[in-house]
Length: 261
Image (tube, rainbow, N blue to C red; front, side, top):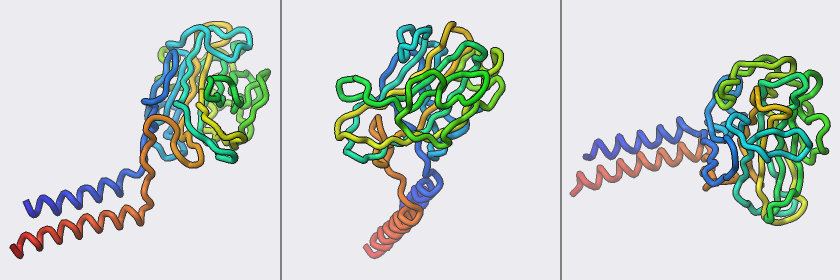
């Protein structure tokens, strides 16, 4: 029993030191169509945030009536975070990665926008759109953006992208424009205090073949995770080491006290 206590303390310390990354929590998010969470898969690597998983939406399994109302949307999916509180000058940050198997004149697109507490549009943060040439982000022929993007513009990394949320379209490509953008960082400074929700969506354009999706991660407001219960802050290495040392010392003290009695 005495040895077990010490071993448990060492094991717990090792777990804390070896697993600093967390996974995005979308259990509190809601949406329509096809969405979920996933780890590194195909062309979509683990996100720059350091999380072990990211969220995604895809037109594969999408529904009608989704989109920004530009005219030729057929089906798609959308997901929104729970409402979160923000103050003036709070910084909203997140990462996204647009992935498409469509091309030529089928200009599928994705977007992220900020909604107010009544569900109305507050700010269009970014757009991404399939195009045979030029930049995929920001999307051509779409409303102006409000977020700052890093990098500021992104041509597609071409080819038939392999990514499981695309379903049967994974690895396929219809003409020019297929591929993925890789991870892009979006930043937006809140101008009015209030309650907001982050919405992310993607749609097919002109047909329902050759699907498109969006990966997203690292959504924070003023450095605090958005949605779900939010993962606990990751302690700095020195803090984890101090905690681990304390656990081991506590176990040692327990053993010494037991011996003295």
